[in-house]
Length: 298
Image 1 (tube, rainbow, N blue to C red):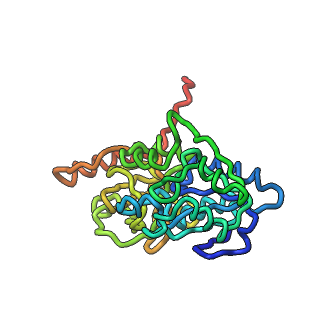
Image 2: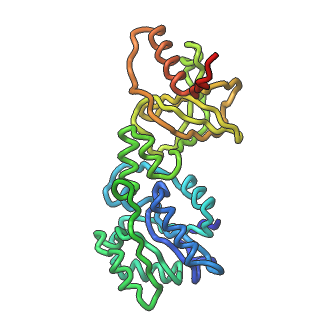
Image 3: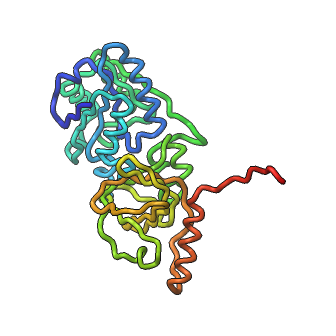
């Protein structure tokens, strides 16, 4: 998959592309990708036109926290069979482009033959451009297909998934995403408190722009060197540490990926080490798979 940033490239010419933010690459985005691939078959390239940083963070002037930071998003699109991603650098100057000038920029830099957008797509200065106006402005330049939003008890959106994560509703967020929420990072040295208590943990340095869920303890799966280990993750602000079930070894400086399954409990303060140990042991029991009784009596 080719990554292109603000620079024309022959691979994009006459391609079939989708335009959008695509944070989270959720089920609605995946629907767009499947449609793109059908349109492109058998001989056109399939591309994604998106922005860095995402428009929301520039226009609203809020701290940047992604569901899927750049490398994670690219890996998902690679697995979905996308041929290239074209990034426009989104600046204050870019945000005031008229809808017509935005379309002209796509024509000059990307040169697609067909473009697909969701029905809620907006673009140009003050988001004045809509999916319908894109179709009108782009006539005789490239054709535009508008897809209806995917629904699941409401419209599936990055905003909705973000809100669910910040409320700790991991299962609901995963359902809308179509996969488990991921947190990746490098194992760093911690204070050794977990080991002192008899429950050693790995401490993870997470990218600053990755959205972390509501503080709490979570049931997770940790992937390292293509092996998977169940674990209990403690997450508070930017601190992420995990106790791995049935693991012995040193993962210092290793890259790991954490899959989140469900939130077990809130963060609580404990009066002494013994009370804390009891709570951690209870967390681990919730993480471990339950052995079902066969129901066969003597």
